Image: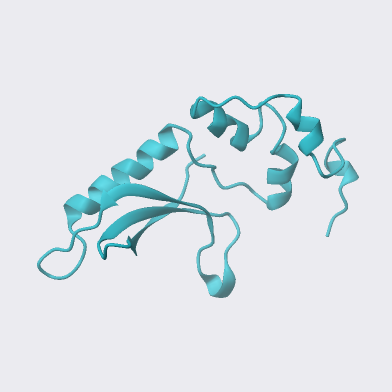
Length: 130
């Protein structure tokens, strides 16, 4: 599954700009604007060209950084719904969260799974439709 994202330039405390990547959620936000599932800094300084826009070199570097995040599994891909996301959140083998922690080299104890579930664990048939 491909991951849709947008690059956004954000002002830092020192007045310079850094590119951030917003990973688009499957459901649209208010007024048709994109809703972002996650926002991460690319660490790439956004530089202005002679015309006042961002330089192509800095945009390409930010795109490369975003693609690297996706390839390393450091972001969650957009899912069909929040319901599916919640059902899979603590399920080993299905959880994007657990995969991202493993990619970072962090272990999550299996003893945490049942204790962290705040909804019926038998499956989707137990959850009421809204």
